[in-house]
Amino acid sequence: MTNTTNRVSRILFKEIVDGDVRKIHADSNDSDTGGGARDFRFGSYNELQHIFHSMFPKPIQERRKRNGVTSLFTIYSGYFYWKDPVTGETLSKVSFFEPPTDARPQEGRITKIHEHPCLSTDLMPKSSINNRVFLLLTQMDDGSVWPSYVEERTLRSVGLWADEITTKMLNCIDSPRRANLSVIGYYDFTTHSRYCNC
Image (cartoon, rainbow, N blue to C red; front, side, top):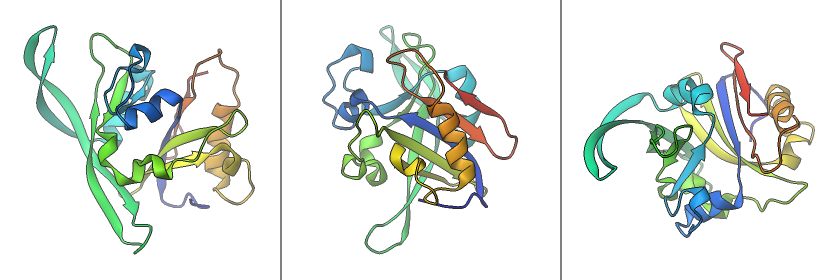
């Protein structure tokens, strides 16, 4: 947690739903959540694309099978950073983002999430109706991206987070949206651009 935005360039956040938890364990059989792929899916791709390219800046060519044909596709990589909970050492691991497929044209994916200790479900608080949980990606001014899980109640508690982060996230979280639409949004502190899927 941080109570300062001195070095924060942008934040991207997504409400964690049951399907996301199943994906981390690769035990999803629900086609609506994308099957058993271990990834976090983000809708509203057109609105979020430039944020993903900031956080995953390196293009990579990978072979993928689409409609029975194997072809080269461009995916993107970056690094996730986190502090070791025991030693306090800063650790990092390469991270990957894949653009939408033809089958899901508005969904980009952060893939291989089960390989990141900082995204372990052991670190994920249990959500409830009155205390939703969010994946928060915080990009600092040096380009590093720090993932974390955030409880709604901590956002509503004074002093635990910087007011700027709290305000930006809660403005989106509290916006009216249709039932069963999970929260997705970003705020860029360098350009003051924003998006909320409300």
